[in-house]
Each structure stands twice: as structure tokens, then as C-alpha cells.
Image (tube, rainbow, N blue to C red; front, side, top):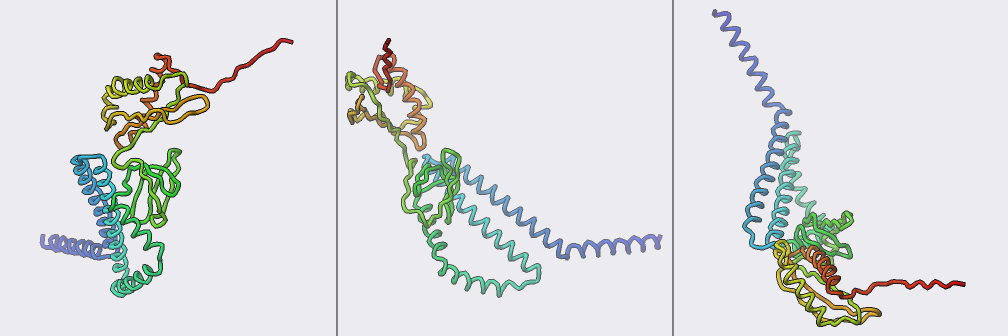
Length: 290
């Protein structure tokens, strides 16, 4: 029994030494660092996701929700960058590289590069101003430097737009001069309708208002999208074969197209019933018999 006990104790000590060797090995440390990296990224993503969901649910307006999503996206990118830097520094330390001189060198080099790289500094400053002032938010439909699209991604360096054709445009923040935001606070469904010269403009305007109040606004989904009643500017211009009547409807951000599409459909159906002529080009063919 003493011999068996001695052999068991000896085997246990050897196994303990093996595990201790593994625990203090380079690869074990590397695995722990990688695990912590993945864990920190995942936990950060989950926490910010929960915060975003909570704050968006409590937001009192669509504008506040967009600003919340944009700011939290920026915070998440900054945290991920810091985690990546710590991961790289930890790896260098495990490879036996003294990181203190590197940090000092990086500080001096960073300042030199920062002063030398004018474009980079311009992008960061412009991006910070654009984001914090609320000029752009993720989900906005905008026009920047002649390119229109929905803001898919926004950080301190670059804006990513996707247009209606699915094309993606990458625009440096430092190059942005004029931003046209079509969905800031509210949008406008703007329409110019053409009717024939023999139609009474006052009658057409009354029909348009009736369509808005008794057909368009009675639809629950449309009523939620509309902020204010229709504004009819009246007869705005004379064309070769028609007169133009301008209408405007203030809507929730990005809802102007849905309201405009539905209103146009109702106008076409009602004009047919009311015998209001919408002019269109046509050709009279005269056939002569020889």
C-alpha cells in the first residue's frame, strides 16, 4: 500500500508539473490574451446594444433616435480601437519586446505624424464637428459633394453612403463642404400637378384638399407619417399645354416618398372620376387615300 501511495503521489506531482508548465508557457498566455480580446469585444457589443435599445425606446422623436444610434456607434468604434491597441501591446510584451520605449517613441512619432498629416487631422476635426453637431446621423438621406444616398456608416474619418442603385460612396470628412440633409427633423412631399387649361384651378384645388383630408389622411399608416395638413400654393406656372399647381405636405423624416406615392395614386383615381383632364402628349395620324 505504501508503494502504491508513493507511486500515486509521484504521478500526481508529475501531472501537476506538466499543467504548471503549460500554464506558464507562452502559448497559454497567448490563448488567454486572445480569449480576453474576444470576450471584451463581445461584452462591449452586447452592453452598447442594450444601452442603444433602451435609449432608442425612450427617445421622444425620430431625430433623437438617429442621433443616439450615431453617437453610440462612434463610442463603440473608439472602444474597439482601444481594445485592439491593448491587445497589440500585450502581444509585444509576450514576445519579450520592451513596450515602454515603444510607447515613448510612438508618442513623439504620433505628434510628428499628426502635424505632418494635414489630411488626417482635417478629417478627424471635420468628422468630430459633423457628428457632435448632428449634421449627419446614421439613417439620414443626404447629398454630399454631389452624391446622394442613405448614411450607412459614420465615423471621425469617413462617411459611407448607399444610393438608390445600391452603389456605395466613401467620402472623407475633410472633403465635405456642403451637406444637404433631406431627412433632418422633417421631410416635405413636394408635388407639381399638371392639368389642362380648360380646368377651373379653384375646383382642382378643392378636389386636392378633399383627397388629402378624406382619403389620404384617413389611412392609419399615412396619418402617422403626416405632420401637418396639405399646403396648396396655387397656380404656379403656365406650360405649353397645361397649368401647374404646387402642393406640399410636411411628413416625418424619410416618409415623404411613401406619402407622395400614395397621394399621386389617389389623385389619378379621383381625377378620372371627376373628369379632370391631365394633359399628355399624343399624335394625331391622318391617313389619306390616293
